[in-house]
Image 1 (cartoon, rainbow, N blue to C red):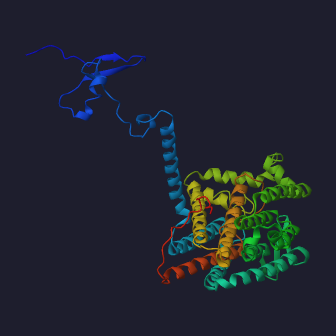
Image 2: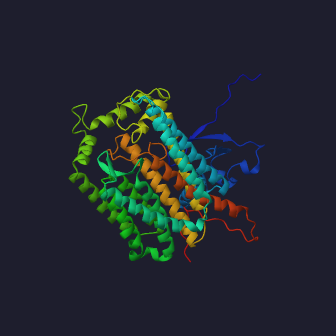
Length: 489
């Protein structure tokens, strides 16, 4: 037996480089294509060939044969960019896809879940009422929720062609009610602002009616103008002046800065959806910022809230920082799972308006981070459902433009108000007194929000009816994504 040690593959240094390559003998059983370079190129190397590197599986341009002018690298980068665009388009299809049946139940389910969640948290935050009637506030909120559900059902089945007329009527009614709040003895003041209208035992906020009225009326006006809406005079009159501007002035006359911000958001969303130039939004943002700063500067209690937000008057526990600090304590003590439903300690008269503007802090304390994320997730589901309904309308008719404008306006209203409330209770912005939609205590706010969802469900119901109606067979065209660049002819 041959006991000689086997010889390892030799290593030869490549000419012109400092690296060495492993060389192995060519096997006779190897296929012709694996035998290496031709014989004339192998001369001088003997019967040895270079062991080629294996492909790393990533499709690197360095492993491909071709010219060395960089074209392979550019082609590889183009393929990678195309794949990234395909992934983004697939992800975006979640928001703009769906069918009329799914979208209808998506919006309805998220709305019912938020309203039920709000009733539960109102009951939990007011069950420690010192008056000995722990169910009074929650019962009153439940009655308003029932009225809102009836209004939502009515708006769901009303003919869609009536929506524009309803918007005009609601705009007139809202303007009259806001004028009564600001300039009549029926206006009720609370929290530094006069935004309640009290007639006998009935009390409500006409500003909530104004939000829905501005959405319906503004959408009807802009949809009727069609392509002319891009011209300055056509979007300025009558939507901005006298429409939105009159509502804004009447709300500010009562001292409600938080609702004024929501009114501005609704008007901006309608104009953006209609296709107004961005230069006008930049100018409006500068003017609005200056107006808000001026209103804060000339109003003592608003400036006091700004100082509290900056931490300039927090030396004494009863200073304006008290409400925000106690709210942060509640959120911090909740942890991930919370202390348990109904087990909050901060709701025992530590946080003012705990069942109204600061109810999100009780959610964080009793249900923890999981509860707050659940609330945010329900709002996200609601927004996705409404956006799908808006995207399900095609064409440039009056109805198509009206549906898109109404849906985007309601999204701006609900999401904008929720963002302001959550940013307020977490200390990102000063306290402005805006309730959390569907969850905070407030009968008029809950009722009008449910009626607004009824308008969206009306559009979804019509899409369901149209989907069931048999149509003449035509050539199916692929729907163009909202992420696709505009086509030029």
